[in-house]
Length: 124
Image 1: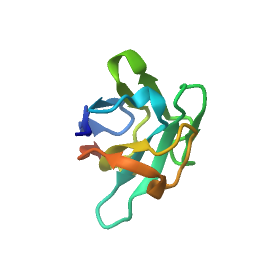
Image 2: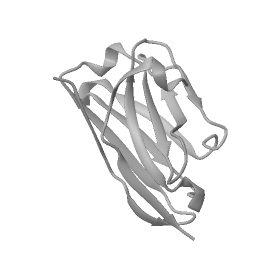
Image 3: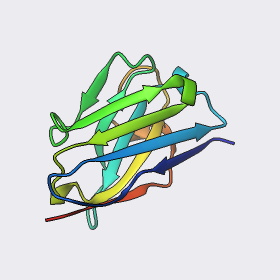
């Protein structure tokens, strides 16, 4: 049984930083690209960042460029998302997901497994 568990969410002031983790069980993440998505209240889920199976390729949403960093640790079977210079509009539930492929993709339907999400709230 594949399980993804996100952690690290919480309440942070604007301008602050937060580090999210996504630990997997039942699946070796190093064989797949990974992604982070988020969903704000009343909005659709949106792509945030993705990293290839090797870790050498990454891609970010325009809203995340220059502030978010996605990384992975194959030994720990974990993917991370570092969020810096946080803004109130970063407030959302953040989800990690396992891609069906090794290469990066921004499309949610190309991901096969999803975590339960972790709440991130940024106060102004």
